Length: 226
Image (tube, rainbow, N blue to C red):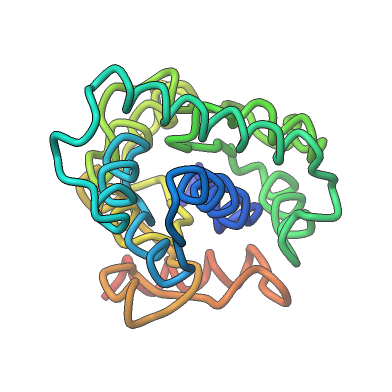
């Protein structure tokens, strides 16, 4: 029986990828080169500093072009711009079907958690006005290891209650690294997006629009009995 539903944020609850891209593109422009959406695909599921290294590679800057201190400054500047963008977000940016789905989950008595690597999770939740839909929130300030390590999801389960087993939890993720993290933590996983990319998930849905919690629960029950 599923007792807890754990949600990633970016690409699952809301799409903040566009704001990350705008901030990285702005940094690239200041450095004198173009950073395209195709280039940006390489940054998905990657840490901020690793993303910066990829961006600098795209711009033709070698590994020793900038000091570590300067790189830290650039990463901080990118984050400042990103925070500027997300601080203007509104509840209208919640992805289709998410609110209804969360309400169904909670009505069913299932505990809810949000597990995200983002250090800006609190800002986004407050702007979207959905903090009260989660029993607990774990963000990048509370973990030391990034996905595909399962730390963020295991911490969610721990904060939801010490009586929870991993097999009683389902994770909703849009990234392959997140699906891998859920599996590593012994949890069920539902991919949100492309089945080819998320093929390791227990099953994949295109999004929450038109999807009910009872449908998910039924499919997981069938999966458990296979």
